[in-house]
Image (tube, rainbow, N blue to C red; front, side, top):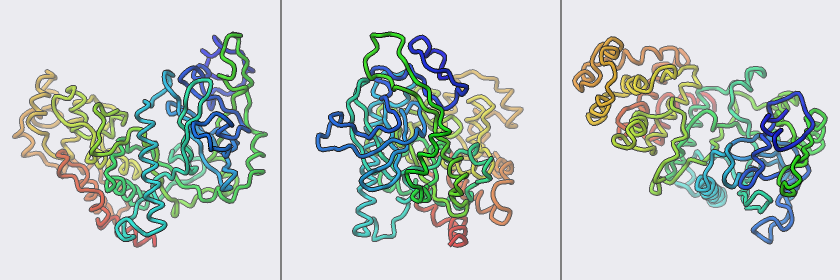
Length: 451
């Protein structure tokens, strides 16, 4: 059944499944907007745009979280499947996004969509040679709805399949790592050329385009209702605001299983990566005063790690160059290896970054010395005192990369490691810009082989 704490507020039909149901306590002022299958959004007189007519018919729930809820819907005007993300307003404890993050995501996706349309109509963007936009999630529409729990920004996008390894193992699906690497770098390179910093380049923020979904008719989706678990909801408290909770909850639609059972999974050799979730993104010339810093620890570059550890005394906040380091960590994981161990402490992780990318700045070493950790422990691990700048002058960086010797295909392994080393540099200014990396032999060779 849904979260146990919901029992304090609601009575509903128990069910055997916990997974796939959102917590009912999120349906409160500033929380989730209540939606049920069959709704057509935006409902009349709920949209801030009075000319907006009901257009997106809800068929299944695709997911939920701090970002709100996401629904599989049918665009009845353009006759295509779309994903409708309904963001929370304020105040829900499960909420991870701030109003500014939601606004930024809408602004960025809107601008990217305008660039895409400009390219399609006039072959603009560097005379048609500028590519990478095809790897960015496409947003079709956005609007604000007024509901019983507040105002909610709604984003209408293409439907994508999450790039989640646990989904793929049972279906024997694995994107080609070399092809995926080229697409990821091209997509993030496009963002950087537009002056946009993504801020959270992780595997969770990548998806796979689903062109095959266009072959699915509405009747095919309605047939899935038989396997959907439905849980009616009844408020215990008669003073609960009318309409603030949905009449029932439904289990999350297993999109990947549906595609696999319908023989519509993308080909691993021809899948197209999509970059998602721009909630922590920002324009490089309009940075957050206090960057969100939601990127998981293992993806963070040394300058961001030390910046957070020191409370901003040394290091720098997230920027374009930080995206590049994070992408190196992401790409290495696609090839089955982890650059930075996650089972050790933050100081050791920082020094591991420097073992791969070069000596840390003097001011960072001076700060680390104030932490008072055991120098003998690090001397036995590194073979030197890591707080002495001279110790890094004699460090064998090639040896530090030997642990990565299993990365990539045998024939291209050295070339792939060279690509990573151009991205993994302690000094952010020395990281190779992504548009230059597109000419790297590893990417060029694999692009030619796939054509």
